[in-house]
Amino acid sequence: MAATSRTYRSIRGALSAACALTGIGGVATSHATEVETAILGYTEPNRVSALETVLQARHDFGSGRLANFKVVYDALTGASASGAVPGAAVQTFTRPSGRGSYTTAPGETPLDDTFRDARVAVSGGATLPLGRLSTISAGLYGSGEHDYTSLGANASFSRDFDRRNRTLSAGVSFSQDTVTPEGGRPIPFASMTPVGPDQPRLAGDGSKDVADAMLGLVQVIDRATLVQFTYSLSRVTGYQTDPYKLVSVVDPTTGAPVDQIFEHRPDARTKHILFGRVKRQLPHGALDLSYRFMTDDWGIASHTVELRDRVALGGGGKYLQPHMRYYSQSAADFYARWLLDGAALPDHATADYRLGEFHAWTFGLEHGRDLGRDHRLTARVEYYRQVGDGHPAGAPGALANYDLFPVVDAWIFQVGYSFGS
Amino acid sequence: MRRRNRTALAAGLALAASLLTSSLFGGCASLGVQPWERDLLAQRSMRLDGDPVTAALDEHIYFSKEASTGGAGFGGGGCGCN
Image (cartoon, rainbow over all chains, first blue to last red; front, side, top):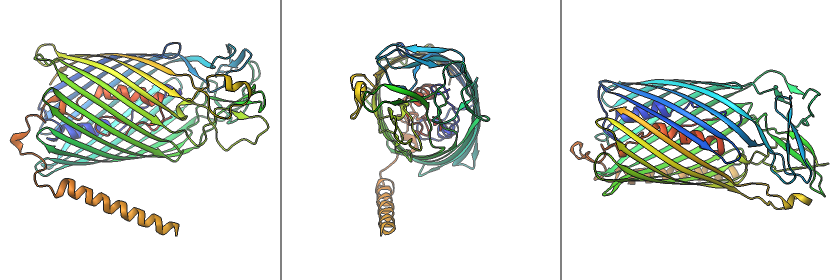
């Protein structure tokens, strides 16, 4: 579930449809169907691999009425860091189901190799005009995998001003997610039991509610430039612990793991996100630059800068598009790479590297071309590299000798085919 | 005292935001274009939702590797999980 529990229940679909309807950011097409398909391969050497397929269709009924539909299928397999620290001896971990175990060699980062999952997500929505300058959009979303389901709905309102040079939007979305982990939900901070005896579990499934609200502004600056600003507020309540992640309790002197306990996260999280973007048409093509700031009450703050520079290559709709992304985040207040034996347990703790401090780079290149009238082909390759502090201060004993935040490398390959206009 | 500081900060931010907004979008008569000047803006590469499939796939990847999601609104999408 952890790496795979992604729900796509956003207001993006509704808002993007509303945006396409307005004059800003392009001219709305009329009475046409556009179908986009893509297949994406994702691989982290020695860790996770995933294959994802997407089919998205949008129909314009004319007079500002739009409908969209999307289905996603993905399959994931491989290994993911469990959160436990390396040790000087071979370590044995019980699989999340409680049946079977896996071992980690001395000095190696424990990787839970149990991940094998498939997910189907379906979403649809509609946009309707409301007078000459306004639109309303609404959508539904649902996804399922063997240990996770999500159902959501969204709605948004959009209005143009100043000769359609300015668009203001507001949207809300709500979803309810349910997690039914392999073997059940572990009791927070309970010790991982060896294979055989039953792991103590919490009763019932875990569920959480996600409520999002967003305000958006798009402004045309001049004939070749437009800017976008959004503010988003997200409130998540309910079970947010990753039932498959561990925290190692280590000897304060030697650093040797003496216990592995299940992590525990707070059951409420509030996020604020500010996003700004500028798009500019240049003689060689189009530039797209964005910045995002996120802060939450878990103590995490992040910065994301992203740049796409589309370079037109003569006729036939050919282009090359270099892509660069930089991301950095601070750690959650309750992130702890290890806990010390004999010390009092904190209220919450996780050793999930995704809630730790790190930065990441993405470099990519996309090529696109037209295949006859209204048919387009795209292909891209991207490289993602995530780097954290592998030797944090205060690591006791032998832990100081190990890389406690191994670099995560990933390659992404994608081919897309679309038709219609 | 702390509450007063916070109120003053909020008032300052609101004032700065309104000044910024008015100077950016209200006070500049030349901002924006006429309907017949939308040739470049109309190109596919200028659409804010020009590549929604790739945007959603990227969002999915970064959601599973990082602690931040969403925010882009018209092009990103969000997920409250993790």
